[in-house]
Length: 154
Length: 154
Image (cartoon, rainbow over all chains, first blue to last red; front, side):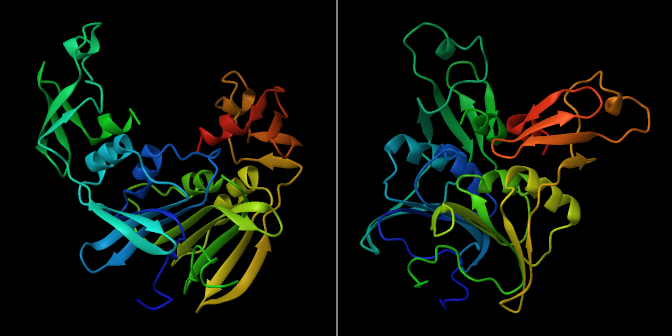
């Protein structure tokens, strides 16, 4: 890739979340809790031309790795993303985000009467009915959650 | 600047909003109406090291120039930004954002009873009492607006 088409440059250490579906980078940024008051360098490319996806988004977070709960959340909103751990400008680990068939404990059920929202020790559990656009169904009450409902929780 | 420190690369045509106060790029993105469904390539750098500001943010919008109402809004939230119009990789116009002493018609007064919110043909008008953090005072009712109140309108 020539210098002029590489929109967001290499980073020394940190995490690159690549192949995010075009236009979804700002959702990923929200998941990572990046707001006006966050420290640390972040680079974001939106609607960047991609061979594999046509267009894609990319987010580079310098100086830190993602924790597993962040990866689980990204899987919900960018199910085809790849996560690269970078050390000294080199990719030392590459993993593909994977949305499992059931999603447990990551988001809350939107139905306030659901047993997973009660004081019972019951973790939320959803079946992934559809990846794109996202459609989750609660194991306990059958309540359906879509992408917008999920995003509101992050 | 070496290739490795240039976080967000040159663009061919469009607008570069530079020297945004560190951490405020996502506010600027919101002003520009950039959401998941916007087309066009956008690159964003957050908390990038800067000689002038210590850290700064930068937003590059490919393929379009900003309209004056967008520039007025950016002045409210990033009063020290510079806006560069790029054609064929060259800066053809450079302007400094300037927050005027009075801000007219850009935002609505947060007081529902203010005459500028009535059906009278009265444009909103605020005095800039402070730039950082932003503090605006309504000319008509004295209502004070801060940054968070302003952001909610964009």
